[in-house]
Length: 226
Image (cartoon, rainbow, N blue to C red):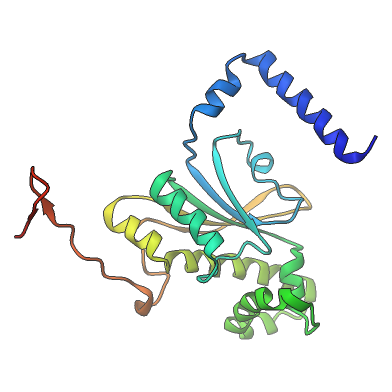
């Protein structure tokens, strides 16, 4: 039996177990999704969002890429972010990195990795922002761990810089944004930073957007000017 066939058998076993516990499980699952969390994590296969948080299908909306990056030109990530914030109305956004991240490690070297160099450039920029702190760490492994943490913090800041997040804050009280790091050696998550709605103190003034005040609309749909 091929390994991929074992996955199909495991799927049948999982589906059967769910139905045995609750005959309406998949009816409810298919009806809608109302996740409270958006997880922006690394594509690393060792960090499954649901298993490390004990969440069930439908509870956490997931986007993953190499080294859990929030890049302002990444339309894939931005599309997920917009849908999560504006349609699903998630209450919390989690940027989750992990120690021993291959993408972060690769960014610390001068090796040519081909196409992914363009992506790793974003992590190199994080290193450059914090050169003094990182170069002061003589232990290479500790410097590596610290860059993993700093990368998470910078991606949280990149989220706050988006119009998607700032516009949501201008009209409501969500989402909260959190920066976490998962430890592969003990399975625990370390919290690095929490940003409350409308807290723009983590970014510079130049990244802050001014939105027009919403106009009052009359009963016939006419715009009522104040």
